[in-house]
Length: 190
Image (cartoon, rainbow, N blue to C red; front, side, top):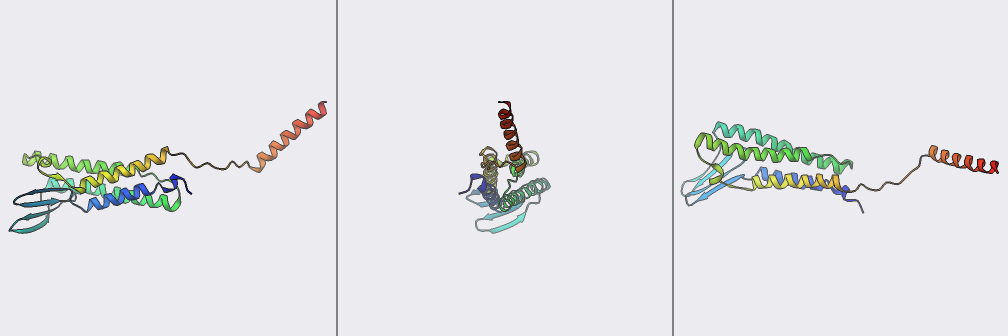
């Protein structure tokens, strides 16, 4: 039976998979009796008005494009790093640190949330998050990041596997020699 440290790679792997699923699902949605709207962190918007059909397109607002591009790139790079470090830890049996990408993923998600809110307030005088509800695209990023951070904390706080105490041959010889010298010294002294 292995130590818990042998399975720490599962935390960032599951966290990375949750974040990847969140990346491809809507980050926010709006629904009323006219229809509904979904939008993704990376700038895709899907609008369905009842009786008129569905329209899917990328945002044309320059502020939203910049915010979405920067934050999506940070989050996607973080997801790739988290999953690759989990694989590296599993394959090569050494703990690779995935704390920085996990924090970067959460910071990128918060940056996108705050950036979209500021863009809405500055250019449209509307609070975006008072109208739009967060979707799994945002919630999943936090879940994946927190799960990866928990794995890192466990890796730093769990006890290391006990190692066998092996005395090198030279030290054994020196101990034996010192003991024999002391024994001989005591014998010769008497």
